[in-house]
Amino acid sequence: MFLGSYEPKLDEKGRVILPAKFREELSSGLVLTRGQEHCIYVFSAREFESMSDKIRQAPVTSKQARDYMRVFLSGASAETPDKQHRVTIPATLRAYAGLDRDLTVIGTGSRVEIWDATAWQTYLAEQEAAFADTAEEVIPGLF
Image 1: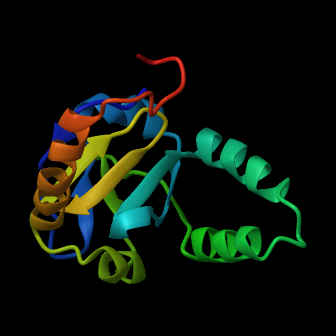
Image 2: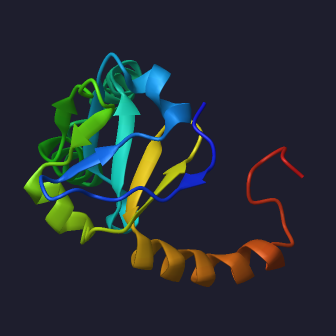
């Protein structure tokens, strides 16, 4: 399970060093793809395969499902970390997420997200008030 927030740097070759706590689960391979809110989703190869299986079960007659599948899968890139635990983020994904040198990498349970550090701070500031004000059951059975 991926948890926590980290602040690595993007190097001049578009690589990021994976946080130590994420390395074991991602060491045998991972998939980077477009995430929602202009971040990059990072899945272990196993989790991405499971997610792909679920996506393929969506009816081909659903325009919303087709649109989601196209955006999600067309941006996907299978990668393997190098010996220094670095992963290259393809230029198209860096541009999509607006990545600069300063990054925030967060664990969200089954996946990792890579954000431009400024974009993450803006997003978090916007969401914290709503998080604190949540008065009803947003996640069934949680509260």
